Amino acid sequence: MKIKNSTLFLIWAGAAISIAEVFTGSYFAPLGLTKGILSILLGHIIGTLFFALGGLMSFRVKKPAIESTKGVLGEKGMVFIGFLNVLQLIGWTAVMIIQSAKAFNGAIGMSTSLGIFIVGISVLLWTLFFDSEAYWINNIAVVLLFILTIFVVLYLKGGKIGHVAGDMSFSGAVELAVAMPVSWLPLVGDYTMNSKDERSSFIYIFAGYFIASCFMYFIGLYVALKTGGKDIISYFASIKTGVVPLLIILLSTVTTTFMDVYSAAVSTLSIVKAKLSRKNLLIIYSIVGLIAAYLFPIDNYQNFLYAIGSVFIPAYTVVFEDFFLMKSKSDKLLNVPATISFVVGTLMYNYLTYFGTSLSKWFITPTIGTIILTAVIYPLMKFVHRREEKIYG
Image (tube, rainbow, N blue to C red):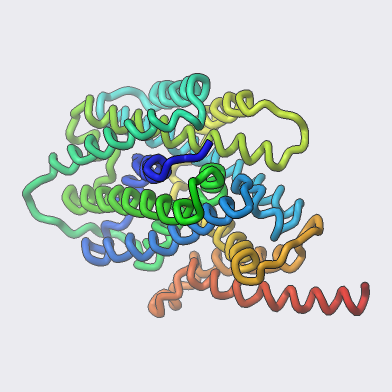
Protein backbone atom coordinates (compact mmCIF):
# COMPACT_ATOMS: atom_id res chain seq x y z
CA MET A 1 0.00 0.00 0.00
CA LYS A 2 1.36 3.39 -1.02
CA ILE A 3 1.72 5.93 1.79
CA LYS A 4 0.30 9.40 1.16
CA ASN A 5 2.70 12.34 1.33
CA SER A 6 0.78 13.96 4.18
CA THR A 7 0.84 10.68 6.10
CA LEU A 8 4.58 10.29 5.52
CA PHE A 9 5.11 13.82 6.84
CA LEU A 10 3.00 13.17 9.92
CA ILE A 11 4.56 9.77 10.67
CA TRP A 12 7.99 11.36 11.07
CA ALA A 13 6.72 14.52 12.69
CA GLY A 14 5.02 12.21 15.18
CA ALA A 15 8.25 10.27 15.71
CA ALA A 16 9.93 13.54 16.70
CA ILE A 17 7.17 14.74 19.03
CA SER A 18 8.28 12.92 22.16
CA ILE A 19 9.45 13.63 25.66
CA ALA A 20 12.89 12.21 24.76
CA GLU A 21 13.43 15.02 22.25
CA VAL A 22 12.32 17.71 24.71
CA PHE A 23 14.46 16.14 27.43
CA THR A 24 17.52 16.18 25.15
CA GLY A 25 16.93 19.83 24.26
CA SER A 26 17.36 20.78 27.92
CA TYR A 27 21.03 19.68 27.72
CA PHE A 28 21.69 22.67 25.42
CA ALA A 29 20.84 25.30 28.05
CA PRO A 30 24.45 26.07 29.15
CA LEU A 31 25.08 27.39 25.60
CA GLY A 32 22.41 30.07 25.95
CA LEU A 33 19.54 30.75 23.58
CA THR A 34 21.41 31.85 20.44
CA LYS A 35 24.15 29.20 20.42
CA GLY A 36 21.65 26.61 21.60
CA ILE A 37 19.34 27.24 18.65
CA LEU A 38 22.29 27.34 16.22
CA SER A 39 23.59 23.97 17.44
CA ILE A 40 20.08 22.49 17.23
CA LEU A 41 19.67 23.64 13.62
CA LEU A 42 23.17 22.62 12.49
CA GLY A 43 22.95 19.18 14.09
CA HIS A 44 19.51 18.54 12.67
CA ILE A 45 20.53 19.59 9.16
CA ILE A 46 23.34 17.02 9.21
CA GLY A 47 21.42 14.27 11.02
CA THR A 48 18.16 14.66 9.10
CA LEU A 49 20.00 14.71 5.78
CA PHE A 50 21.51 11.32 6.63
CA PHE A 51 18.10 10.13 7.79
CA ALA A 52 16.37 11.24 4.56
CA LEU A 53 19.06 9.67 2.35
CA GLY A 54 18.34 6.37 4.09
CA GLY A 55 14.69 6.74 3.17
CA LEU A 56 15.54 7.55 -0.44
CA MET A 57 17.82 4.51 -0.72
CA SER A 58 15.10 2.13 0.49
CA PHE A 59 12.63 3.63 -1.97
CA ARG A 60 15.01 3.02 -4.86
CA VAL A 61 15.76 -0.60 -4.01
CA LYS A 62 12.20 -1.29 -2.72
CA LYS A 63 13.50 -3.03 0.38
CA PRO A 64 13.25 -2.37 4.15
CA ALA A 65 15.94 -0.21 5.72
CA ILE A 66 18.28 -2.95 6.92
CA GLU A 67 17.94 -5.07 3.76
CA SER A 68 18.80 -2.03 1.62
CA THR A 69 22.35 -2.05 3.07
CA LYS A 70 23.08 -5.58 1.85
CA GLY A 71 24.16 -4.43 -1.62
CA VAL A 72 27.00 -2.44 -0.07
CA LEU A 73 27.92 -4.21 3.17
CA GLY A 74 27.32 -7.78 2.06
CA GLU A 75 25.08 -10.26 3.88
CA LYS A 76 27.20 -10.49 7.04
CA GLY A 77 27.60 -6.72 7.19
CA MET A 78 23.84 -6.32 6.87
CA VAL A 79 23.27 -8.84 9.67
CA PHE A 80 25.71 -7.00 11.93
CA ILE A 81 24.08 -3.60 11.34
CA GLY A 82 20.65 -5.19 11.78
CA PHE A 83 21.70 -6.70 15.10
CA LEU A 84 23.02 -3.34 16.34
CA ASN A 85 19.79 -1.72 15.21
CA VAL A 86 17.67 -4.18 17.20
CA LEU A 87 19.80 -3.47 20.28
CA GLN A 88 19.46 0.31 19.93
CA LEU A 89 15.70 0.02 19.36
CA ILE A 90 15.31 -2.03 22.54
CA GLY A 91 17.38 0.67 24.24
CA TRP A 92 15.13 3.40 22.85
CA THR A 93 12.03 1.51 23.97
CA ALA A 94 13.45 1.38 27.50
CA VAL A 95 14.49 5.06 27.43
CA MET A 96 11.06 6.23 26.28
CA ILE A 97 9.28 4.16 28.93
CA ILE A 98 11.62 5.34 31.72
CA GLN A 99 11.39 9.03 30.82
CA SER A 100 7.61 8.82 30.59
CA ALA A 101 7.41 7.03 33.94
CA LYS A 102 9.58 9.70 35.56
CA ALA A 103 7.29 12.38 34.15
CA PHE A 104 4.29 10.51 35.59
CA ASN A 105 6.07 10.61 38.91
CA GLY A 106 6.57 14.36 38.63
CA ALA A 107 3.10 15.19 37.36
CA ILE A 108 0.94 13.14 39.73
CA GLY A 109 3.35 11.56 42.21
CA MET A 110 3.06 8.03 40.78
CA SER A 111 6.03 5.82 41.65
CA THR A 112 8.50 5.40 38.80
CA SER A 113 8.27 1.59 38.99
CA LEU A 114 4.48 1.67 38.60
CA GLY A 115 4.80 4.26 35.83
CA ILE A 116 7.20 2.01 33.91
CA PHE A 117 4.72 -0.86 34.18
CA ILE A 118 1.73 1.24 33.01
CA VAL A 119 3.55 2.84 30.08
CA GLY A 120 5.16 -0.45 29.06
CA ILE A 121 1.82 -2.28 29.12
CA SER A 122 0.28 0.54 27.06
CA VAL A 123 2.94 0.03 24.39
CA LEU A 124 2.29 -3.72 24.48
CA LEU A 125 -1.47 -3.21 24.07
CA TRP A 126 -0.85 -0.87 21.15
CA THR A 127 1.22 -3.56 19.38
CA LEU A 128 -1.59 -6.06 19.93
CA PHE A 129 -4.41 -3.93 18.50
CA PHE A 130 -2.74 -1.71 15.92
CA ASP A 131 -0.14 -2.27 13.24
CA SER A 132 1.88 -0.08 10.89
CA GLU A 133 -1.18 0.50 8.69
CA ALA A 134 -3.00 2.45 11.43
CA TYR A 135 -1.63 5.72 10.05
CA TRP A 136 -4.81 7.69 10.64
CA ILE A 137 -4.47 7.15 14.40
CA ASN A 138 -0.89 8.39 14.28
CA ASN A 139 -1.97 11.46 12.28
CA ILE A 140 -4.59 12.41 14.87
CA ALA A 141 -2.11 11.82 17.70
CA VAL A 142 0.51 14.05 16.06
CA VAL A 143 -1.88 16.99 15.74
CA LEU A 144 -3.10 16.58 19.32
CA LEU A 145 0.42 16.21 20.66
CA PHE A 146 1.58 19.35 18.89
CA ILE A 147 -1.31 21.37 20.33
CA LEU A 148 -0.82 19.92 23.79
CA THR A 149 2.90 20.64 23.75
CA ILE A 150 2.15 24.33 23.21
CA PHE A 151 0.48 24.36 26.64
CA VAL A 152 3.82 23.47 28.22
CA VAL A 153 5.34 26.71 26.90
CA LEU A 154 2.33 28.80 27.93
CA TYR A 155 3.04 28.07 31.58
CA LEU A 156 6.37 29.83 31.13
CA LYS A 157 5.22 33.05 29.43
CA GLY A 158 6.72 36.20 30.86
CA GLY A 159 9.89 36.50 32.88
CA LYS A 160 13.49 36.51 31.74
CA ILE A 161 15.69 33.88 30.18
CA GLY A 162 18.36 33.03 32.72
CA HIS A 163 21.89 31.67 32.61
CA VAL A 164 22.35 27.94 33.17
CA ALA A 165 25.67 26.59 34.38
CA GLY A 166 27.14 23.52 32.74
CA ASP A 167 29.97 22.14 30.63
CA MET A 168 28.09 21.45 27.40
CA SER A 169 30.26 22.41 24.41
CA PHE A 170 28.93 23.59 21.06
CA SER A 171 30.44 20.49 19.44
CA GLY A 172 28.81 18.20 22.01
CA ALA A 173 25.45 19.88 21.50
CA VAL A 174 25.66 19.44 17.73
CA GLU A 175 26.28 15.73 18.29
CA LEU A 176 23.20 15.38 20.48
CA ALA A 177 21.16 17.02 17.73
CA VAL A 178 22.67 14.75 15.06
CA ALA A 179 22.17 11.56 17.08
CA MET A 180 18.38 11.71 17.32
CA PRO A 181 17.52 11.65 13.57
CA VAL A 182 20.44 9.28 12.92
CA SER A 183 18.95 6.82 15.42
CA TRP A 184 15.97 6.48 13.06
CA LEU A 185 18.21 5.77 10.06
CA PRO A 186 18.08 1.96 10.23
CA LEU A 187 14.28 1.98 10.14
CA VAL A 188 13.16 4.94 8.02
CA GLY A 189 13.23 2.78 4.89
CA ASP A 190 10.65 0.42 6.41
CA TYR A 191 8.16 3.20 5.62
CA THR A 192 9.64 5.07 2.65
CA MET A 193 9.89 1.98 0.49
CA ASN A 194 6.12 2.42 0.16
CA SER A 195 6.29 6.15 -0.69
CA LYS A 196 4.35 7.47 -3.69
CA ASP A 197 7.48 8.61 -5.52
CA GLU A 198 11.19 9.30 -5.09
CA ARG A 199 10.71 12.98 -4.29
CA SER A 200 8.24 12.15 -1.53
CA SER A 201 10.56 9.59 0.00
CA PHE A 202 13.09 12.34 0.66
CA ILE A 203 11.34 15.70 1.04
CA TYR A 204 8.37 14.78 3.23
CA ILE A 205 10.28 12.75 5.77
CA PHE A 206 13.02 15.40 5.94
CA ALA A 207 10.52 18.21 6.47
CA GLY A 208 8.36 16.28 8.92
CA TYR A 209 11.18 15.20 11.17
CA PHE A 210 13.28 18.37 10.89
CA ILE A 211 10.48 20.78 11.77
CA ALA A 212 9.01 18.75 14.63
CA SER A 213 12.33 17.66 16.15
CA CYS A 214 13.83 21.18 16.11
CA PHE A 215 10.66 22.44 17.78
CA MET A 216 10.85 19.77 20.49
CA TYR A 217 14.52 20.54 21.16
CA PHE A 218 13.70 24.24 21.33
CA ILE A 219 11.00 23.59 23.93
CA GLY A 220 13.51 21.64 26.03
CA LEU A 221 16.07 24.45 25.69
CA TYR A 222 13.46 27.11 26.46
CA VAL A 223 12.11 25.32 29.52
CA ALA A 224 15.64 24.87 30.90
CA LEU A 225 16.57 28.53 30.31
CA LYS A 226 13.34 29.82 31.88
CA THR A 227 13.51 27.55 34.92
CA GLY A 228 17.21 27.78 35.73
CA GLY A 229 18.21 24.44 34.27
CA LYS A 230 15.24 22.14 34.87
CA ASP A 231 14.64 19.44 32.32
CA ILE A 232 11.10 18.74 31.15
CA ILE A 233 10.55 15.99 33.74
CA SER A 234 11.58 18.24 36.63
CA TYR A 235 9.41 20.97 35.16
CA PHE A 236 6.35 18.70 35.14
CA ALA A 237 7.05 17.93 38.78
CA SER A 238 7.12 21.64 39.65
CA ILE A 239 3.89 22.68 37.91
CA LYS A 240 1.86 19.73 39.27
CA THR A 241 -0.72 19.78 36.48
CA GLY A 242 -1.68 16.23 35.74
CA VAL A 243 -3.91 16.01 32.68
CA VAL A 244 -2.04 17.89 29.95
CA PRO A 245 1.43 16.46 30.74
CA LEU A 246 0.05 12.95 31.02
CA LEU A 247 -1.68 13.21 27.64
CA ILE A 248 1.53 14.44 26.05
CA ILE A 249 3.59 11.74 27.71
CA LEU A 250 1.30 8.78 27.08
CA LEU A 251 0.34 9.58 23.47
CA SER A 252 3.87 10.46 22.37
CA THR A 253 5.44 7.48 24.10
CA VAL A 254 3.01 4.90 22.76
CA THR A 255 2.97 6.11 19.13
CA THR A 256 6.72 6.73 18.94
CA THR A 257 7.81 3.62 20.86
CA PHE A 258 5.60 1.44 18.68
CA MET A 259 7.75 2.52 15.71
CA ASP A 260 10.84 1.29 17.59
CA VAL A 261 9.23 -2.04 18.40
CA TYR A 262 7.82 -2.43 14.88
CA SER A 263 11.16 -1.79 13.20
CA ALA A 264 13.00 -4.07 15.64
CA ALA A 265 10.66 -6.81 14.38
CA VAL A 266 11.23 -5.84 10.72
CA SER A 267 15.02 -5.80 11.22
CA THR A 268 14.87 -9.24 12.83
CA LEU A 269 12.90 -10.62 9.89
CA SER A 270 15.56 -9.17 7.57
CA ILE A 271 18.55 -10.76 9.30
CA VAL A 272 17.14 -14.06 10.61
CA LYS A 273 16.40 -16.66 7.97
CA ALA A 274 14.09 -18.72 10.17
CA LYS A 275 10.36 -18.26 9.64
CA LEU A 276 9.13 -15.90 12.34
CA SER A 277 5.83 -14.19 13.02
CA ARG A 278 5.98 -10.37 12.95
CA LYS A 279 3.14 -10.19 15.46
CA ASN A 280 4.96 -12.47 17.89
CA LEU A 281 8.13 -10.41 17.51
CA LEU A 282 6.17 -7.22 18.27
CA ILE A 283 4.91 -8.75 21.50
CA ILE A 284 8.36 -10.11 22.43
CA TYR A 285 10.15 -6.79 21.86
CA SER A 286 7.47 -4.86 23.73
CA ILE A 287 8.01 -7.13 26.75
CA VAL A 288 11.82 -7.03 26.41
CA GLY A 289 11.69 -3.22 26.25
CA LEU A 290 9.57 -3.15 29.39
CA ILE A 291 12.00 -5.41 31.24
CA ALA A 292 14.97 -3.36 29.98
CA ALA A 293 13.31 -0.22 31.37
CA TYR A 294 13.73 -1.63 34.86
CA LEU A 295 17.40 -2.42 34.19
CA PHE A 296 18.55 0.42 31.90
CA PRO A 297 20.85 3.04 33.54
CA ILE A 298 19.04 6.25 32.51
CA ASP A 299 21.96 8.32 33.85
CA ASN A 300 23.92 7.17 30.78
CA TYR A 301 21.35 8.60 28.37
CA GLN A 302 23.75 11.15 26.85
CA ASN A 303 26.39 8.46 26.25
CA PHE A 304 23.69 6.25 24.73
CA LEU A 305 23.08 8.95 22.09
CA TYR A 306 26.81 9.26 21.40
CA ALA A 307 27.07 5.47 21.04
CA ILE A 308 24.35 5.53 18.37
CA GLY A 309 26.25 8.18 16.42
CA SER A 310 29.52 6.27 16.71
CA VAL A 311 27.96 3.23 15.02
CA PHE A 312 25.57 4.54 12.40
CA ILE A 313 27.44 7.66 11.20
CA PRO A 314 30.48 5.74 9.83
CA ALA A 315 28.37 2.77 8.70
CA TYR A 316 26.00 4.88 6.63
CA THR A 317 28.78 7.14 5.33
CA VAL A 318 30.15 4.01 3.67
CA VAL A 319 26.72 2.86 2.50
CA PHE A 320 25.71 6.22 1.01
CA GLU A 321 29.10 6.86 -0.62
CA ASP A 322 28.97 3.48 -2.32
CA PHE A 323 25.26 3.50 -3.21
CA PHE A 324 24.84 7.09 -4.43
CA LEU A 325 28.33 7.94 -5.72
CA MET A 326 30.23 4.77 -6.61
CA LYS A 327 27.08 2.85 -7.57
CA SER A 328 28.86 -0.46 -7.02
CA LYS A 329 27.29 -3.60 -5.64
CA SER A 330 28.78 -6.20 -3.31
CA ASP A 331 27.87 -9.82 -4.00
CA LYS A 332 30.12 -11.14 -1.23
CA LEU A 333 29.22 -12.20 2.28
CA LEU A 334 31.25 -9.31 3.71
CA ASN A 335 32.53 -6.10 2.12
CA VAL A 336 36.01 -6.02 3.71
CA PRO A 337 36.91 -2.41 2.73
CA ALA A 338 33.57 -1.23 4.10
CA THR A 339 34.15 -3.12 7.36
CA ILE A 340 37.63 -1.63 7.85
CA SER A 341 36.34 1.87 7.07
CA PHE A 342 33.45 1.41 9.49
CA VAL A 343 35.76 0.31 12.33
CA VAL A 344 38.17 3.20 11.74
CA GLY A 345 35.26 5.64 11.57
CA THR A 346 33.82 4.34 14.84
CA LEU A 347 37.18 4.75 16.57
CA MET A 348 37.49 8.26 15.13
CA TYR A 349 34.03 9.24 16.35
CA ASN A 350 34.74 8.08 19.90
CA TYR A 351 38.13 9.80 19.94
CA LEU A 352 36.65 13.12 18.80
CA THR A 353 33.74 12.79 21.25
CA TYR A 354 35.81 12.18 24.36
CA PHE A 355 39.30 13.53 23.53
CA GLY A 356 39.07 15.80 20.50
CA THR A 357 37.89 19.01 22.15
CA SER A 358 40.78 21.02 20.66
CA LEU A 359 39.39 20.38 17.17
CA SER A 360 35.89 21.63 18.00
CA LYS A 361 37.04 25.25 17.63
CA TRP A 362 37.51 24.48 13.92
CA PHE A 363 33.96 23.07 13.82
CA ILE A 364 35.39 19.55 13.42
CA THR A 365 32.63 17.89 15.41
CA PRO A 366 32.72 14.09 15.86
CA THR A 367 30.14 13.63 13.10
CA ILE A 368 31.84 15.94 10.59
CA GLY A 369 35.29 14.50 11.34
CA THR A 370 34.02 10.93 11.07
CA ILE A 371 32.19 11.55 7.79
CA ILE A 372 35.29 13.12 6.22
CA LEU A 373 37.69 10.42 7.41
CA THR A 374 35.41 7.50 6.54
CA ALA A 375 34.57 8.94 3.11
CA VAL A 376 38.29 9.28 2.32
CA ILE A 377 39.35 5.90 3.70
CA TYR A 378 36.66 3.79 2.02
CA PRO A 379 37.68 4.31 -1.64
CA LEU A 380 41.34 3.86 -0.64
CA MET A 381 40.49 0.57 1.08
CA LYS A 382 38.56 -0.57 -2.00
CA PHE A 383 41.53 0.26 -4.24
CA VAL A 384 43.99 -1.63 -2.02
CA HIS A 385 41.63 -4.59 -1.70
CA ARG A 386 41.17 -4.83 -5.49
CA ARG A 387 44.92 -4.82 -6.00
CA GLU A 388 45.39 -7.58 -3.45
CA GLU A 389 42.69 -9.66 -5.11
CA LYS A 390 44.44 -9.28 -8.49
CA ILE A 391 47.84 -10.17 -7.02
CA TYR A 392 46.74 -13.07 -4.79
CA GLY A 393 43.46 -14.00 -6.49
